[in-house]
Image (cartoon, rainbow, N blue to C red):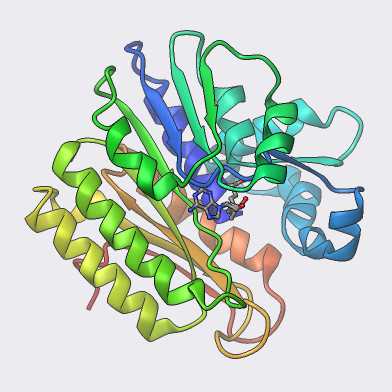
Length: 281
Ligand SMILES: C[S@@+](CC[C@H](N)C(=O)[O-])C[C@H]1O[C@@H](n2cnc3c(N)ncnc32)[C@H](O)[C@@H]1O
């Protein structure tokens, strides 16, 4: 959920300038989720996430509402009669980008790619490819518009032993992408399950962004929320690293995260952070 709040905030900032830009999603998923569908019935975690935020948002302080507005506007636009449809990253992009902007989506798995096509419908701004997003990324960069955002959101499937592999793939993808397009906005999602592994990943990514990409440390932000003590058992936290975070995004997130954490916490040890991994002590 934090990744979608971040994504919507970054797209909102990109929309502040009239020049066109491009959105690239390496792991697009199925586009949108039916919260009353079988899948959501089987794993109703959304009730403790977006469900709680949806119910409490009207009484949130103004600065929190301003921070959540780009994301909540998309959800509200899909849910005139109560919360039922949840937008994935492709749907957030499709609803926020303008006519002149471009959308490129990669989804490796056939059934998901099919659902994605159905969810997104016909859209002349959009191209959907059923292929490996990590492999596809270099060929897409730099985008012809020279402005834009790349979301890297791999599944981190533990069952397939892919958790470590996804960290490694993300670093490899980041290295290749940065060489081609250091000016892009990048959002890298990762679970917060193993604090040491996340700290190592963030530190390596930050030094790459600074040394290879020439980014200033304050343009790199780690944004995490955990709803209970981090440790064994079900995933308690997740977040993103943003590279080239657009102006104003950090302030919005610092306003929203304490409130989001308060709404979503599920016991002792919940917490959040918004900080530069290159400047964290
Ligand atoms: C976490 S989901 C993406 C969610 C989506 N970005 C969103 O926010 O709504 C990860 C997706 O990546 C797909 N996937 C797995 N490996 C992939 C790869 N190498 N390239 C592209 N897609 C992949 C999975 O099928 C799954 O749909």
